[in-house]
Amino acid sequence: MKTHPFQYVKYVVDPAAKIATVTLSNPGKRNAAPFWGEEQLLEAIDDWEKNDDVKVVVIRGEGDHFCGGHDLEGYFDGFGTRSKTNERGLPNRHQLLLQRDLRQVWRRLFFSLKPTIAQISGHCIELGNQLQACCDISIAAEDAHIGNLGQVGGIAGITLIRLYAHLIGYKRTREMMVTGRTYSGREAALIGLVNRAVPREALADEVMNEARRIALLPIDGIVSGKAYSHLVWEAMGMGQAFTELYLGHTLGLKLRFEDGDFAFFKEVRRNGASAAVARRRELYEPLGGFGPDAEIPIVPERGAAG
Image (cartoon, rainbow, N blue to C red; front, top):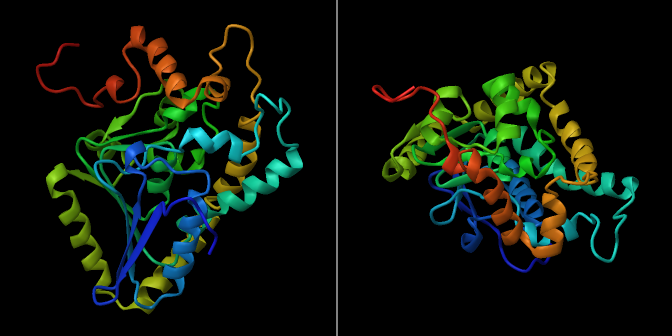
């Protein structure tokens, strides 16, 4: 096991219930993932795949939030992008190798031979949304906030876009990528981004009940059924999403910003993530807000204006 500054992925197995729980833990930053967070998730996947005491896996966040995306403070250094001391960053050959090896976690999660359930509360943003999309079942609190805010840093669609398009269609995928708007848990359930939404206070019980239902099945049947479904997903081209991700992400980290562009990535490197996020929010305020503040109901409430 590699040594990291802290245990971001807390992994616990209940052998009696046959349920494993993965808890993302960086609560001071809405459980944002450090650069090496995916390595720890891979270690958990390696265990639950081979562990006969695990029939189903629940993935949740510590405290009020699921996952707020990547922790940007170390993100750009980890990926070797341009900095004050290295304007050119890593050459493509090195960046592609790094991206391919680190991003394999999403392929492994999506094609896991054990069922996975995402328990979504609070913020489920960018990497968090990507994670839940790779799970078999996603159950959200009605007041959760789900979306891809990092895309309006400039990359505007370089993510697991194939999975999102299958889940919610082309138009809603493009809107999510380019507007900076999120969906509430309730709205996400209406469009198929998650399976269903429940009141926040009922979320943990709802997820655990679903896990226990799955754990009633024989383990050979569970694994065989998932392996069979993978044949179908591959035939539909779903596996290609993960090759697209690492190639596209390498391109996205080399964006060129023109004069007058809001260079979010450059702002992070120069002034820190908090300043960059605050500036981005300021730009969107005259246009209806940003992120959760700009959520628009799919189906307006009765009696609403418009």
